[in-house]
Image (cartoon, rainbow, N blue to C red; front, side, top):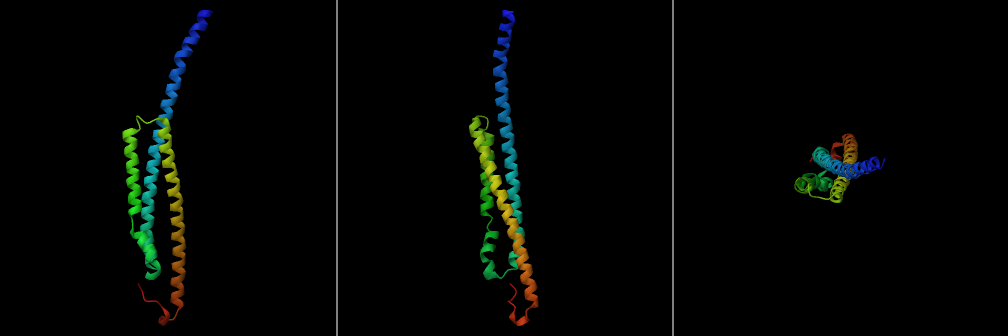
Length: 158
């Protein structure tokens, strides 16, 4: 009986560290996978934002130039999206070069940062879609009203 107890303790002493090590490797692998998925999602949101900004151009062109100058400048400036894509590329390079040596805490922090960026971009994309709908509605209403005005009161076409 004491040999059986000793054998059980020996198995437990060997199995517990192996189980713990496997658990840590699995957590690390899941975090790395999540980080790469988040980076892909951020890239998709950046591409979608760039497309939405381009789709605003025809709507802004329908607004008189004196009113639309600021909006047109924002649409024409793609610098913020290029900078965000550059930052994302740097993040991917960090993952490639340092993920193997990074602590779990560092990986968790990087994953959380990407998650926050994704959430912020998603929110901003939602806001951009709302602005696009509002602008389309306003320019459609203005165009309809302009058609009802006498020709002498109409603004010249841009």
